[in-house]
Image (cartoon, rainbow, N blue to C red; front, side, top):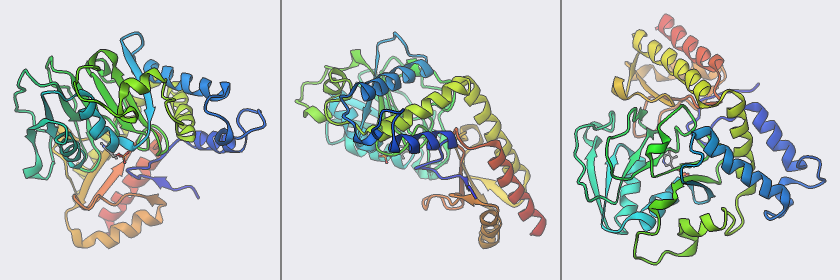
Amino acid sequence: MKKHNFSAGPAILPQEVLQKAAEAVKELDGIGLSLIEISHRSKEFIAIMDEAQSLVLELLGLQNKGYRVLFLQGGASMQFLMVAQNLLENKAGYLNTGTWSTKALKEAKLFGEALEVASSKAENFNHIPKQYTLSPDLDYFHITTNNTIFGTQIKTLPETTIPLVADMSSDIFSKPFPYDQLALFYAGAQKNMGPAGTTLVVVKEDILGKVSRTIPSMLDYRVHIDKESMFNTPPVFAVYTSLLNLRWIKAQGGLTQIGKRNEEKAQLLYAEIDRNPCFVGFAAAEDRSWMNVTFNLKDPDQGAAFDALWTAAGISGLKGHRSVGGYRASIYNALSLDSIHTLIACMQDFEKQS
Ligand SMILES: *Cc1c(COP(=O)(O)O)cnc(C)c1O
């Protein structure tokens, strides 16, 4: 039986995407060859790459606005250093909202002055800091829009003329968002876009070329832009499967429809956490994530009993990250309303038996 997959990442993808990806591994669109045994310079794969790039811009509402789309490798973690290497000349600011932004800041410091503008570390990252000022001489300000581990999410972008750079690994394509206010954003595919193995980078071309250091070719956005993400062999399976998922998002009605469904899912689950006397939410209410819902048992000693209930209901991947404990329901695009109702039923059964 197919499980209810609440994994934080690599995460759930739509069944039809998995089906088509599996078929393409055997044979791509009747060409007598597998997707993973053709040249990335074949007309078939170039068409896949072109469509993936243009669909990204279309879904995000970024057509004809000076953005370029890259499918790179090395995960979001590679972007922690590439961002700084390509953009940091004098000084950069970082909003520290969790484990991933802490890592991004650490890498940036290798390339120059990287400042922690604000941090919620003292409260175990249970909220997004909002009281801070940005010095006007920053090359860029880096934020993490959704904190996958702690379950917080930035709901409104800071108002600033400083170029904004965002790690959007776990909430890209999850709802309409002012993407055009970002100078660069990136996402490891495996949370809400596709399988692990590729990283989406969307960059406004005019922010590049402003640093004086020499950048190795493989780490240089300019090189990858000029080579259309084919400077070296791209991760063909990850790009193709991401394309299938982007097509699925479009067929659902794009980000407006996807966003409505994600909001409904999140609100149902948070309403149950708030209503049910056995549970307590982790994140500050106004910063609650629509993608990763973190919560704890009021009585942690009852963990085994609750775990037995949801495991028997076919739920997988609900355990919280070790730095938060408790539970984390990752409710990405492909997770159905039915899976949400299944989890809520487990929480209600647990309430009845305790
Ligand atoms: C998972 C995650 C990362 C790390 O991604 P990798 O692709 O494994 O390097 C970075 N940032 C956020 C917000 C994440 O959720």
